Image (cartoon, rainbow, N blue to C red; front, top):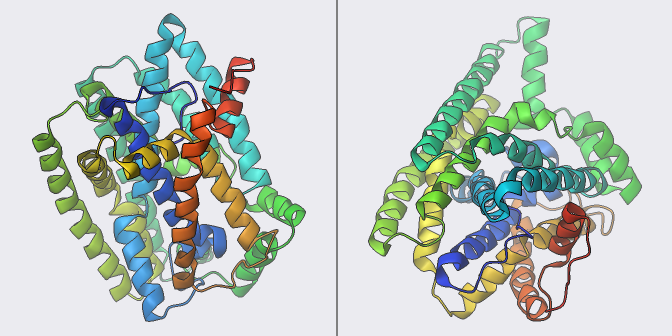
Length: 407
């Protein structure tokens, strides 16, 4: 999730849970996004598109699919819903106005990120869905859970229809079927060489070349509402329910968190492992890539998210060095999120021009040093300043004022 500049939680275990989970999420989203930073877009889902199909590449794809893909984005959305309620509750009668103005400024920042830095921006999408989620802000826990289930079911039906269209187009016996098949191949399969070379030239060139490529090829912010809008909204609704129930603020017993962590992860991760195995067994046929990554994972993604959140709460050690650093990383998650985009596009794009040059397995050698950086800088920064740099900027834009930065 994006950190909330209006939410500076006191240093107690109950609220530190939000910061720690947010810190884990922003570090995990880097792992999920790494292929999208470094390889043509279709390679995010399929090794056949680019990045190698050796044993190490397939193994790292499988591990990422089972443990990370979709789940970190879901955890971001989950936390966004909780943080949204914190802001609305603390603003009182002005809660709706404050929230909508914050979403408007987040949308502007997200569009700048999308077109000037990286095509995979999620901020503008969160701003739009966050505005819609306001309609549910006053609902009790059970109503939020019910709304989340209904929304998730709708998304599952829609993705099922889209998957069936892909299966039906497989014979490619008509011009329409061929067009559908090739359209899906650009995302889930092995696109034509011209498409891949265009991705590499556009994203691996200079900064202005990248801007022009993103303007022509990146999905417009409103388009994402049709692809994953209901998925994101359902995660936000579940996060709102988790906040109201005390789940995300550490208000449950350890035994209850343990039951939820073991139950949810014990169900979701083996299911993901089965989907990953089926995808590999079918040779990364784009029909099975979409089935595993989109349709079949819809019902189990949120189960994994809830399980991860419960596990993180269980592992928190109040006063521990790693807990403090993760909490600081979570409090500066906005800056960390944008900062990793700048760093990765420098390495693979406008700076070192390494886009498409590394195999998939090699990419993940970047994770330890970048994680180290994400854990290192926030703690000394927050001893001097109240907000992370971009947290301060968002707050200043949303409130039309210059907040005090130094402690």
